[in-house]
Image 1 (cartoon, protein in one colour):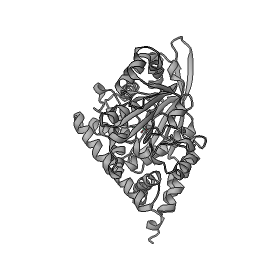
Image 2 (cartoon, rainbow, N blue to C red):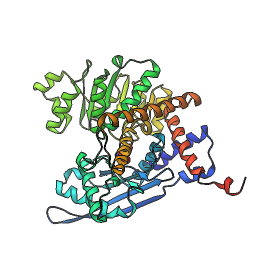
Image 3 (cartoon, helix red, strand yellow):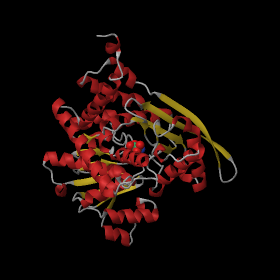
Image 4 (cartoon, rainbow, N blue to C red):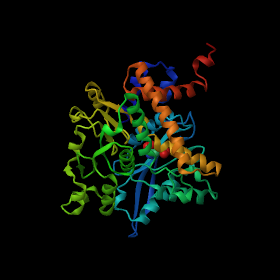
Amino acid sequence: MFDLAHQRLEKVFQFISVDEEVVQRLSFPKRAIVANIPVRMDNGELRVFTGYRVQYDDTRGPTKGGIRFHPDVCMDEVTSLSFWMTVKCAVAGLPFGGAKGGVTVDAKSFSKLELERLSRGYIRAFADVLGQDRDIPAPDMYTNEIIMGWMADEYSVMNRRQEPGIITGKPMHLGGSKGRQSATGRGALMVLNEYARRRGLEPSSMTVAVQGFGNAGYHFARLAKQQGYRVVAVSDSQGAIYSSGGLNVEDVHKFKNQEKRLASVYCDGSVCNMLESEVLSNEQLLELDVDVLVMAAMENQITIENADRVKAKVVLEIANGPVALDADVILEENNVVVIPDVLANSGGVVVSYFEWVQNRAGLYWELDEVNQKLQNIMSKEANLVYDIALQYECSLRTAAYIHGIDRLAGAIDQRGNRKYFSGL
Ligand code: GLU
């Protein structure tokens, strides 16, 4: 996976020339750590879980990136994701480098107390390399604000002082920021709005299908509907629902929450009648003839197997890496525009940055202020990426990478390179 992530860089170097030392520096993570985390289970048994933290590059600032709890977590995946975080923070112009962490675990089967012990154990294992000026974690797949709260608490207990800026995505009363929960979905919508505006497209005439109805997918769908887009389909891991006239996103969310799965809205009872929706498979959702296909589930969902069947005009990547590298080529040939993850899902880390700033200042902002500041960054950076794509006649993904790598290369160069030291 990391080799594939890295191949994206090679494409960028076809368009811009950077010093060879920059290429060398960006080819390896700065630090990659594995730790085995012992957890006492509720039945008294001791189990040991493997945890990772990769700090890819810190040239532009302390490293930043989430922690995921998932059975597939491995060093290769965490390294790829930490590389993407490095590019993402640079694309958004944040004063951060990139990192990622994870634990190989199926935490869905854990009790709340077991989850708390694992979360605190993660911090004890990696505390030496974390810190508000070193490396700042956040939520990712299957971790949430409660887990961030436990982690922040463990860090302050260990260090015998409060340091809320150690971690972002915390609950509101433990130093979290207003607007962090909805930031990824909201930011992605801002990026899509800029795209539509530049193309002269009206949201009210655009249909949207959303794969993945977790936190980011839900907030995206909710806000998109509010702004006039017709959200015709949403899915979770078990299947999708479709309504050509548009779904009532809030109702779908309400019923999914009652049953903890979207399948609860497939029933024959009142809910389905109320939603007037049809049931689709996840594969069918990806092949719908819509204006925008939103990928908010997980990596490698559009591959060489199904890329040819994607009929959407635009694919918006809210998950990290939902379009595989070779699928990108097929989509490009078929004139499907991909708005890439490193731009489209950066709203989450942008509001994480705001949370960190607020923690350090001890001064907290109202929701309107957070959203306005998010809007300023997302519009500005999205337009810069769209301009680069026009200038170089390249895909939006390559343009976003050019934008981020240019900033990273500047920071690496300004610390001195071979030319500088040999006086050339
Ligand atoms: N896990 C999120 C991401 O992939 C958020 C990272 C953060 O806020 O640091 O962008």
